[in-house]
Image (cartoon, rainbow, N blue to C red):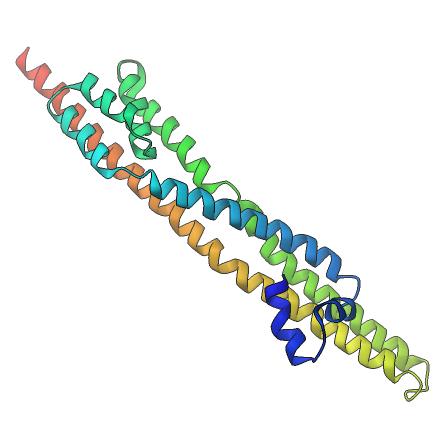
Length: 222
């Protein structure tokens, strides 16, 4: 939130604390909401960095290659040595191939996708809420303005009028600034989750094709 307030404080020739105070009481829930968003974003970025560092496409290809050669145990052994999330799904499916291969693929894939989607509903909720809080601050600020105008003596209440206008502008600008800033990592995290979904589906389909091919060859040999 500090990053978003700095340009506004500079333009209005105020300190950050003065700007926060002039924004009115609504700035406190906006501050709390922004901390929630920052916490989720930082945790998710760390998660993505960790997952990217453990990505091992060569292990996935080696698993598929072993499966192609009908060396299932060898494929499982390779996958268990890897920290790659796609490899984990393939290993789980191979280990349960005799009971329910398709269900094992779906269960393991959903489990991994849930890890990538964690925190996204929170951001999806926070972004519109912080905008609405900014609009609420606009309403409360304008209520102060009209209250001061209703007292009749505009000159005597000039401070309340300008304070109400300032509260309205600061609140809505802060809400929009936080929402716009949070949208960037939110879209990136959504894209990363979709990429994970694509990678899992591609590897799962490849493994399923290989196993079906072996089953067809075995049935034909009989």
